[in-house]
Amino acid sequence: MRPEHGTITMWFTAEALGFAMPNLGIELAYANAMTVLGIYLALRIEQLLDDVKFSSSLKAMTVLVFACALLSYASFSFKTPMPFFTTPPGF
Image (cartoon, rainbow, N blue to C red):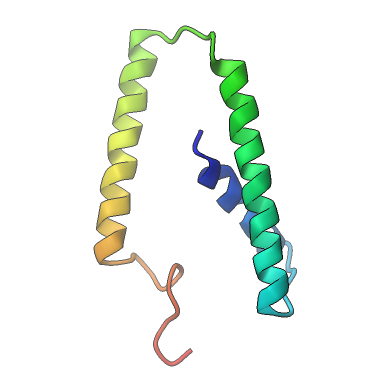
């Protein structure tokens, strides 16, 4: 698990619950706290999964999911699917 996956999920939780960040300073502090928690979560999960042996089918699925993620990240870098990740014009 990459730290940013847990971080993004936790960061969007506040917005999903309707909490608005009153200013940029508080949002930056919140984002940094979520990043630290995401890294901590990734390190704990890595410790837990360190000795686990994965089957060949699970390894193949992991490679497939990674390839799909890589394709989406690359395609979103050139054209986002909606103005969710960027500020839309006129906003």
